[in-house]
Image (cartoon, rainbow, N blue to C red; front, side, top):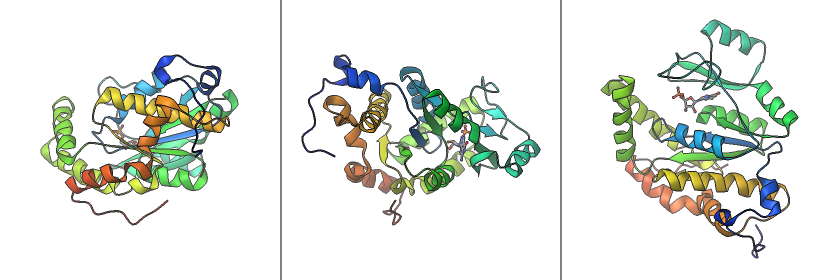
Length: 255
Ligand code: 5GP
């Protein structure tokens, strides 16, 4: 990171040529992981709608569609047998079992994104992210954290009414969240999803600043400020106080 960033107007003050170019994608892979209930789907949807040149990898899953979900939009819904046939045919870039169901990223999404000259956005769990980091070390990994365990529990309880899930499932999701969060150290950016609007801006800033860097430019202004604040090394203090609410110790794993 250069100490003297080039002067560039803030994201909200219009877009100079380099930033406009940075809005288009060219083969970057963005991985987003988060515990269930942290608001990741909303953030991912906002990002998909507001950033150009970003293909979304529609995962395959063996879980049943929820609510208004549609086959081919949120997920490709497969039977266990169909999923296992794809595993046998080596069609997955990564796959994992989450909450008793298979989830996987088909290889073709990455290929298609590259062919279209776009970047690829993946919403996958910590196991899948670890597999991809090994295969694609240049991928940019973002972990979304809830502001505290209490806030996560409140969000899960609010959602549980719509999903008709019981207390046991909420407890299981909280336990899983605690385990997943202990993997934060493997991610490049940590985004604390407190206020949704702020988190969306921060997420967009991360994507823009990585694109600028890839084009040989240094991000500056508001984009730089928002993105840098989320960098793992700059977010440690904040992470520690959140981890403490989960009763987690500092993870020893370092990327
Ligand atoms: P949900 O069923 O709530 O949509 O997702 C459950 C978990 O599966 C989330 O943590 C989500 O990120 C993860 N997930 C979704 N798609 C994939 C995938 O293709 N691979 C992996 N490893 N995890 C996925």
